Image (cartoon, rainbow, N blue to C red):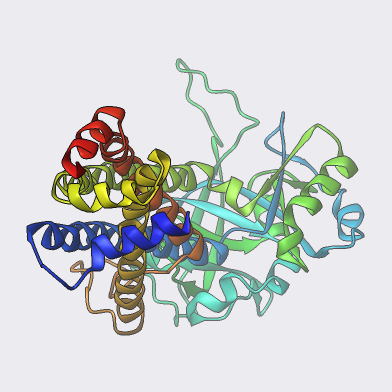
Length: 412
């Protein structure tokens, strides 16, 4: 194998008698390097987007969310059992449903999320306040924290002590009858603004936070919750903790991790990443055609060298391995050059943000990017396999019996 490798290295990098074959070998290395670098950069962008989304959603979503499978609301009597588990730092009872917000002839449909006092300890929305405080009672009056988009839609002044927001919730105890006029179809309450939060438009335009007791009163569900949100001490043990909670509370509840709460979104990202692998794999495969033609032409050009190797006792498999080794060497050099280029460009983009996002509504100024070592390993393996595969047929041709017979005639 060492003989084949040294011969292959000499064929590719020989400084003597530069020919078109040598130039073509450099072109093959360059094209594969560009493909490798491009694949690393694109996948790093997807990694950046995924990590950015995770950082955004972790400000809103709990580490673990617990819901009842059969009912929208259930009795708030599991907190002490779950809180006693080893990896649970805190647990908050949540009551969430749709409401209509009304102020100054303006109306907005949103979600009211009633939370208990433990929610504040989880330090999620508190860190995203742009105005006011995350409190639900001032001077014995009910207050709420509004998303920034809702604030703009309703024209709310968060600094006013005289402003009331009217909240309407469907009275689910009433049956809708088309032929009769319904009274008290909606429950309504007044609430004041204590603060404004801003995370991302899908949250800012749709959510209002209030105390759990206020939400229970509005929705006529005393001592009821729609879910529990759990903060963990060690997020790395999330799967293990999920399994423990499942065993503790039984099969009537569903336990969701932060990733599972946004399963559809993350599945789309993973699918898109898989498509990138497939598309760039095809690009690399097409680039490897250069290797195929390079080694085929080299087999013709190096006939005398091959004949000499045969005369010194080289075997057929050694000649074949010379060409396969050339493909692997080209692939390896391409991986090194492409990985270095990709790593440098991703580092520069991450540090300086040269390529910006030209959208005024974007929460990011530049494209997020994160280099993933695992991606580089997978790409490297792909390039090496493709390069080796492209060199098999030229190697078989150059070491075939007919070729050996013709080379023996050439020597004689």
